[in-house]
Image (cartoon, rainbow, N blue to C red):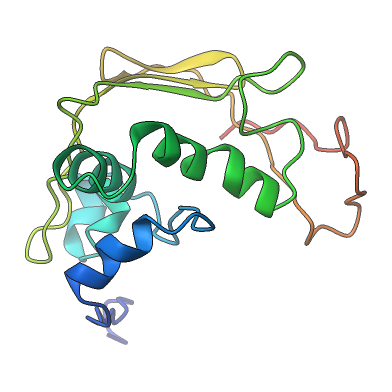
Length: 175
């Protein structure tokens, strides 16, 4: 590790699949991921990661919504958008509403799926055709565009955060 600068990663199996399915149906649950967004190519293939880095949302929509029916598609979309935006104090995000940032994902509920495994996690999910970030197309026909419309998003942990809105406080950043 010292010689090549690599790091050690550990995967813990703490919850049973039945418990995960049960938790998805709870009304107060919202979803996100703490996994890094790594490219499935080049230097990133020299180390492993957790499969959630490539398919956490697709797994929710494909496995738990479509296959197991532990929650409805509408509930899943709310728990992936409006609910976490509210919980994190992200103003002007999470809903399709006039004056809000246009962050949208177009996916096929019949085909969305994750493909990563613990043995081979670097497998891109499928079933997403378009992604709009701040009103600009970032993914078209399943392929990335050159657009980099991302912005810094600040919630309650930011010292400049004000209840009721911090619109305009965030600086534009391109990635």
